[in-house]
Every structure is written in C-alpha cells, then in structure tokens.
Image 1: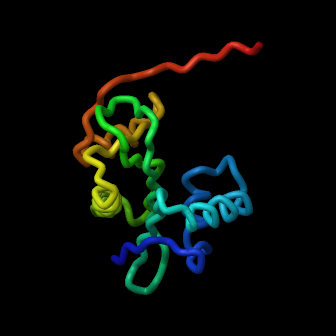
Image 2: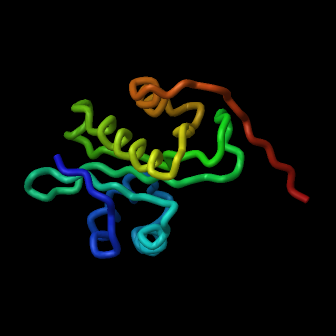
Length: 146
C-alpha cells in the first residue's frame, strides 16, 4: 500500500473517495474543494493506493488555530475525515492513514490531533478508540433562527 499526499495533478484519484465519505455534495463540488485544499499549506489530503494504483483510502486534515473541543493546545492538527473502501477495511489501513496525518501534524509543531464524530456513528467511535484517541467530551449543538 502506498500513501501519498494529493497534489493538483492527482485530484481525480481523491474525488470518488471523498464523495463516498461525504455524499451530500456532488463530485464537482468535491473536485473544486480538493483543488483549493491542494493549494493550502495548512491542509493535507492523503490517498492510499494499492500496488496496482487503485485508490482505496482517504484522509483529510487541517491545522486549526482556533479552539478545538477537547484539546488543550493550539495549533492542533485536526482529522477532518477518513475513509477506507469496502474490501480494504479491517486490515490496518485507517491506522496507517491516521499515522501519516499525525506525522504531518508534527511537522507544524502540533502536539495534539483532534477529531470528532457524530454521536450515533459507532463505527467512527471504534476507529478513534482503536487509533489511540481519548474521548474528551460530548456536545449537542442547538440553534435558534432569528
């Protein structure tokens, strides 16, 4: 398995994986957002490929300078999303992607990796626990239209 940083030239490999992770946006929107991320020094998109070049894993992270729930320092590397294609799960690939994000965050002097998951996303909870994350708090967000 090869994990590499996405560049402007390799966006097309990342689009289907990002769409599978966040299907509420269409592929054109993902393509445009990935083009912006490819140019941003404080964002990283990592794509895992099999030996024959098939893209099967995706991780996206950013450097956050604002307060990050559950973290004690700033800036914080933040795992925005991670996805492994069916058929490639439960073989440690998500851990390898997470480790690559951790290394990237250390390059910015970060000492914490933050992340979040929806309350009902038990799969994400298991991923975080298996990869050494410590649950720090649970939050319910509210809004009131004005």
